[in-house]
Image (cartoon, rainbow, N blue to C red; front, side, top):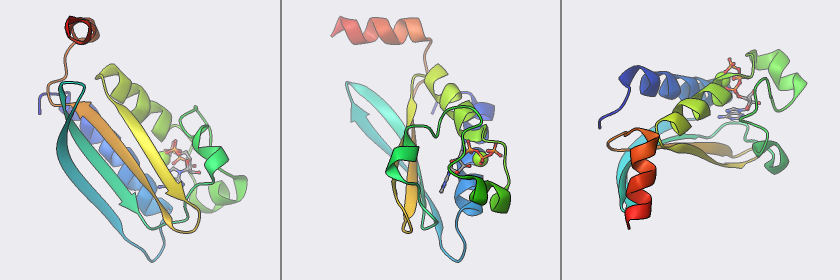
Length: 131
Ligand SMILES: Nc1ncnc2c1ncn2[C@@H]1O[C@H](COP(=O)(O)OP(=O)(O)OP(=O)(O)O)[C@@H](O)[C@H]1O
Ligand SMILES: [Mg+2]
């Protein structure tokens, strides 16, 4: 892929650290795959864990700065509540985003998707309206 290597590395580090932090006696899997949507080739990084999971009403708030699901888990696991907000910002800057699915007590999947070739936002918009 053609992207900002440092930012991609930081996002993967943030999401993999979360999965390791919120998974005790389970597994953390990283799957990387390509697909094509809206005439754009995407690289997908799925970070899949079998950890504590996230309640549905908290998923919407996850990407807000300093947002953490509950105080007891923050006391237990630590953190500042910035990793996801920063990672999502990087992703949007590169024309991608992060998708989340989760079931409490079963685990979570965070999928980062980025264009195979990250381009400036203006040319991405132009390419979409050209169709
Ligand atoms: N894989 C996960 N499983 C369960 N909960 C998660 C997972 N990833 C994130 N969360 C929840 O989302 C919150 C926000 O995550 P985020 O990475 O933004 O902050 P943090 O990990 O608490 O702190 P920081 O990343 O700044 O050290 C976490 O505190 C946790 O409640
Ligand atoms: Mg974090």
